Image (tube, rainbow, N blue to C red; front, top):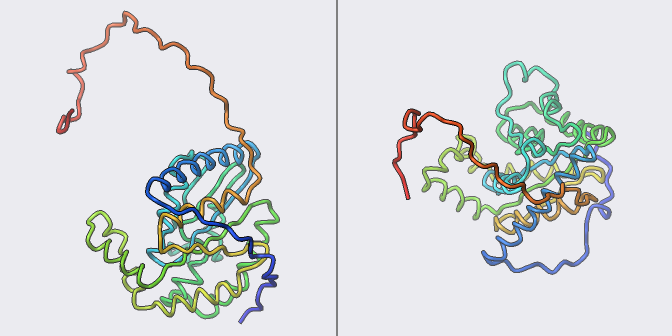
Length: 280
């Protein structure tokens, strides 16, 4: 069993009292729009200053990670804000150093990478489902803090979020997925198997925090029984962690639209038009 990463818990906690905003659908839409405007400002600052940011989203299946990532990326430039959601490792990747395939997806200068699950798969899914050995598991817990400190020293900002959902709410979301044909793909065999291992996942999460919640790369917990407040709280916290300023390009008035010329073009009827199944 590895030595625990050194921590000073008092430095990790923001104890200032915050009066929360009561969310209605209207307030949610307004706040999400405001935060997305700020995300665009962050994006432009990151690009201009050459900042490198890696944001890790972890939590149980159905905790709301994907929905939050989707809202963060929705209004941003995919050339700057990139989503990484790695699948199962290949045969070759299984023989590599565990962190190797994640290193290839880390941000370059001027990039933000959103990891929809990350190297912490080893401390969660792989541990609970028996996809790694005890030796590989404890070695990961020993190496992860050192790996992240190395990335931080190289200039990469590491932000880690854990989305915390109750058993009742997770089950409710699973049942909703069963009823919606467009969400069946979200219920993988692994997700269904995880339903019977609530306690095992809880224990794995607690051990993971014990060894990897450090002052340099702390875990920030996002209560996510309410999806909308979880999204806003996570985005707001992310924005607060960087001293960005508005460096967005200032747009001038658009020039007058070019007048149609006398160019003779082929009739549109000669082109392959999409069948007009719908019209207004």
